[in-house]
Figure 1 (cartoon, helix red, strand yellow):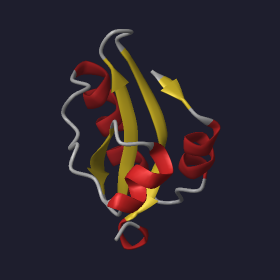
Figure 2: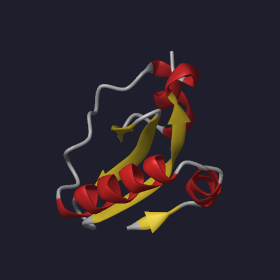
Figure 3: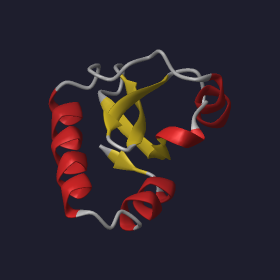
Figure 4: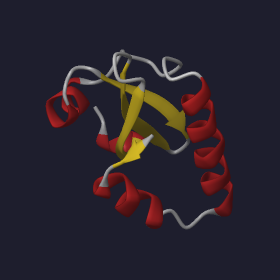
Length: 86
């Protein structure tokens, strides 16, 4: 897994232990099953991160990542608050 600076900044701003726990569990799940996230993304997320990204729910955020099956690599881009992704 590759974590972008944007994701690391987003994750550092999470203050809730409960949300941090959810995030850690989701990252482990994505590492094991990288295609579990939804490819049905809002246009705003596609415009910001590209059309190949996936989202996984880490309430109150969508975790945005991309899986490259050829390289078998997951790139984690960021956490988008639910209200920010129309």
